[in-house]
Structures are given as C-alpha cells and as structure tokens.
Image (cartoon, rainbow, N blue to C red; front, side):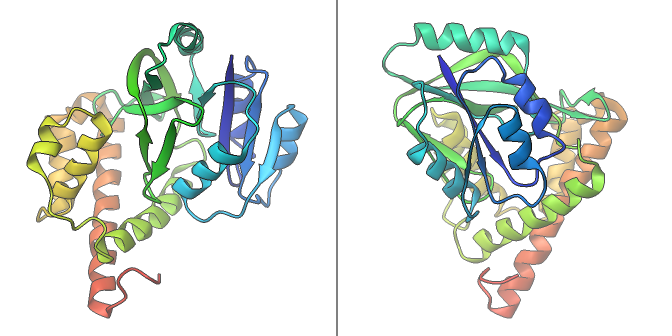
Length: 277
C-alpha cells in the first residue's frame, strides 16, 4: 500500500534501525550517493532495492529518485536514515492513504527531535514535515533544507515521526552543519535568499511550507540573526522548558546561524558569490 524511499550517504550506523522501522512495507528503496561504507550492503541484506547516483544536491537527489525509481505503490513514505516512524504513525499512514480523496497529494507529519534522550518539544524550530507523498504529485526545490512543492491538497497526520539528529555524535552534527552552513551561505551570497520578502506570505500564506520560505527570506534580512534566533528559541518557543537539552540545542542553532553569517560575509567580500568554498 505504501512504498518507502530512503536517501543515503554513509549511513551504516543509522540505516539498520531505519530499515527495521519500515519493514512493514513490501517495497523499500534505498537511493544511495555512492557510500564508501557498508550502507549498500546493509540495504541489500535487508531486502531493499538499492540504486546509486552521484550526489548533486539534496533536492536534485530526491527528485531523481521520485522520478526514476519503479515504485510499486501510489504512495511513498520519505524517512531519513535517522528517522523512525512510530507504530501509531505507521497505522495512521495506512489508514490515511486507504481513505485519501483524489485531491490529497501529500501528508504532513509532526516530527519529534531528540537530544540526549530528551524530546525537544519546545526547542524545535519547525516540527512539521511532508513525509508521505502521492507518486508524481510532489517535487523538491532548494538544494539545502529542500522545500516540497505539491500538486494538490496537503493533509495532516497526528502521530509522531521520531528523529535522532545526534545519533552519530556531536562531532558529526557539527561537521554536517558546517557543510550546511556553507551551502546556505552560497545561496545567500548568490542572491537566492535576498529576494524582497513578502510579509503577507510570511504570516498569512495558506501553505505552511510557503510561509516558511517567506519567513526565512525575512529572517535573512535581520541584523544580529544568531542572537535573534537564540532568544526566539529560548523564550518565544520555550526551549528553556526542555532543560539542558533545550539550552544546548539553542546554542548549537545560534552557532550554526553565525557560521552562515560569517561565511556569507567572506564570500561577498571576496566577490565569490558563493561559487567556491
């Protein structure tokens, strides 16, 4: 009833748990970016279909998989290797696709991020993600923190999807976000995120993800962004209520934002426009 698509790059640590969490599906695809560890071997041993493609961007990779893989079912679940659908979500997804009207093209789920075993209930910047799409009705844009574009109505699911972004350790998270910050800085330096922001779209847009894009455009024009982000997370969203984990996560997110700021300035000062590291 539901196919599964998992994008991978050196995910031998997290992939076994992810594959175990989607064993209910009879059509699991691993779309691998030529991993140099045992990712492909683990996927094949678990009975997943493995396809490899050279990585050229997160949106490009996901779109290539959605466009070219021979999915058996009309609906496709899109977990990352460090995400696990709960039993409640699995059951809810199966009920939802069986009853979905023709105009429904995707489902949005509530993701729960964890740090040191603590659910970051308040600290999460955006807990809602599109993870279940109807084949041929969704594509992704923006090569970092990709944005889904869906042809049709998006419905919501209530059960949670659990996410473990620190499963490989703090050093891995920092290394990954060092790469992410470079990619974000390139987009800003090249002008992609410096379009005039729309207040109406940011606060009153009907589509959740369109609002997020507009809000990000506004955010990138703010002075003292890292401090603004830290204060927003701690005191507006209430990360302080998540205890030490909430404080740690807010600090990490502010540091990530500061890396973007510094790298953008460096690229613009050098006249690179984000074309090189």
